[in-house]
Length: 261
Ligand SMILES: NC(=O)c1ccc[n+]([C@@H]2O[C@H](COP(=O)([O-])OP(=O)(O)OC[C@H]3O[C@@H](n4cnc5c(N)ncnc54)[C@H](O)[C@@H]3O)[C@@H](O)[C@H]2O)c1
Image (cartoon, rainbow, N blue to C red; front, side):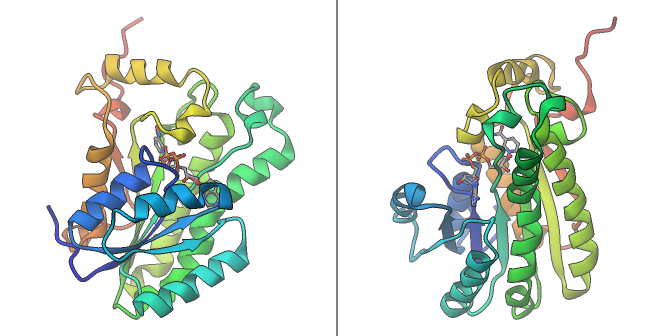
């Protein structure tokens, strides 16, 4: 396992113990990192504080990623507590239910705006805020989480697919901007995993089944497998990798296993 000892990291996107971001937090902590976790609202604060209590000397701070003020306050807190930042995991995503429950063509303008703001723009706003902290450390690693619905149509994924396409493109533009500062920006495209966010996609269990049937490895992926890949991308083991979308999906994306007509 790559070493993150002496490193400080920010993890945005922990809601509960099934969150992919929580799996990454646990793996990064096991690799030696000290972490800051955020919560988006008072409703989730207790959950996040309970989980953070399992970590060594964590920082817990509020951050609704739709708020520029909260992003700025978070960056100040990190500067004060850590004096810089080595990595940032972005695991925030949201789409209003009216954009997931009807055909994509019916997506309301406001729901489209919210989904793209929370799920894609937030990577840009947060990365801009933490980049100066990473520069203090001579560079850093930014990692976000995406899904194959950015490129292919999955039933009911709808506006989240559009948001993930914007997110993956943002990874490439951010990587180009920040590479000269030795700040790397990558994404993991995870296979489907039952989480709170996934529960918002109706018919999600049939997506799980299709992966099980057709992925080269003939199974789904688990949280620990995504977290292990994340620790690689956060660590110096991946120091020459940037602008990349790493598929951690049991190989599903290669398209094998689709029956011939
Ligand atoms: N579960 C899957 O099958 C799967 C597959 C590929 C990618 N992903 C992506 O992984 C990431 C994490 O999702 P998850 O599946 O672990 O579900 P999750 O529900 O545990 O995590 C989503 C997080 O987004 C946060 N969030 C929503 N609105 C926010 C806001 N305004 N401000 C701050 N945080 C906000 C939620 O609090 C939650 O912690 C998401 O980007 C998701 O799209 C999930």
